[in-house]
Image (cartoon, rainbow, N blue to C red; front, side, top):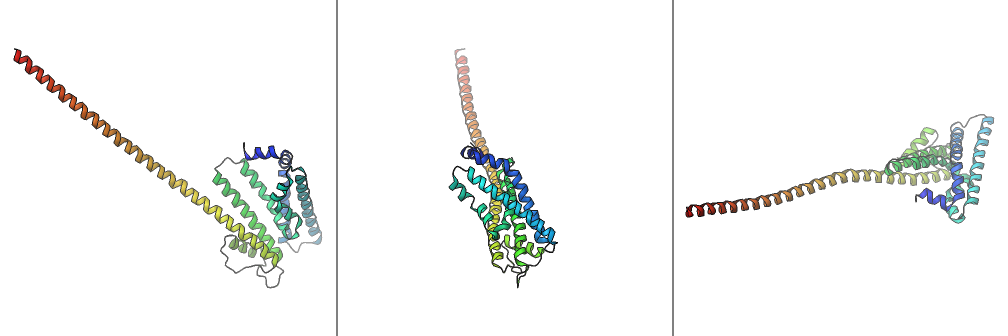
Length: 267
């Protein structure tokens, strides 16, 4: 039984709801990401447009909240559901974490991962790379929003934020850009953890590739060596059989010679 089938059997109501709402929720997540990016990247927009974008972001928040409440009501094991979805609840309740709602877009990668027929290692790398790219983009937007108006801040443009994100998520940390606000430092901490996770997965995947690659060569060498030993054993057996045949032929010659000599003696 697959993990998806086991989940459908354990939580049928919750499973059906998630199957029905996954694409609408992904669409809302993408909408939220677009609205949030627009709001951050164009801070001097007209008030009417700003209100429209804020309204759209609140609508998506309400949709996320309804989705969480319905899932909680449908779950048979609500304690287990609560523990497994603490992040979703925190993103809904804490205004500080509103930027992290864009990570709902990662659901797209989860669905592609389930439908993909490629190798497991390839799916993992695709999923992690996509998730980190989304996280990095979201972190750049979030840190720009909280840092650009802060006194003594060095992150003033989206380019600064992207550069800071790249140096942080790869754990390089040049130090030319760094957050000075508490919210900015909180975002940086999450990004650092994501960077470590990304490096671990990528390093593990590369190591796995080398093991598979050179392990296959080693297995081929072992097979070749085994075949060579088998040929040597067969050759030894063949030589032994040839030796036995030679001895038998020599014995037959001796018998024939003795028989001829005996016949001449009688003559």
